[in-house]
Image (tube, rainbow, N blue to C red):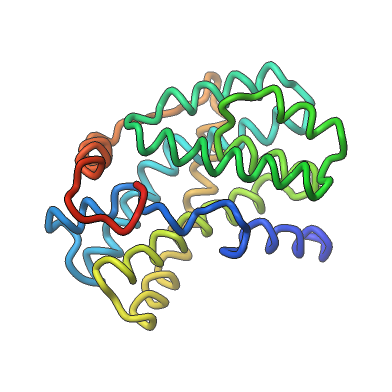
Length: 230
């Protein structure tokens, strides 16, 4: 069981009020709505679930665990390797900008809050660009947050942002959004389990195969009317 101080730290990190700009991105969801792939609550849930169980579980989540291990071991070469690897997998300008902007904002906040002290701030300053999973795992290690707990919060926060984007852009009602979010709880837990298996493999089993997401993200860059930055 997570100790209460670490639980509070985890809630802090996963809060939508954390000033890193997550609310301004839809990660291709808005383009899926524009193309008619997402039209209602059922299709929105299916879109978010598919991205959780494939895109997140196969790539971002296991890389998140590898980054957490690297920070915990103070293996800065491994941190840089996985940070750069993840950055290289962002297929479009918008997806790169998203992880860079949110990663930079969170790394700046880590320094301002004093999480991890001067050593952590110095280590983060040497990474440019710094991706969001890299900064988030650094914060978790600095605050003593367990890897699986931290990843669950990270995946839930991603899911919550997707639901919030769907509420605005489909549009959906608030209650419909809460039904979607509640229904995705098991999928979030499954992401953590699968990510652990993939990260533990030798070599890690990572897959970036998500052609529909890449195409929709690229399409969003020139979409006529947009609410979100990705």
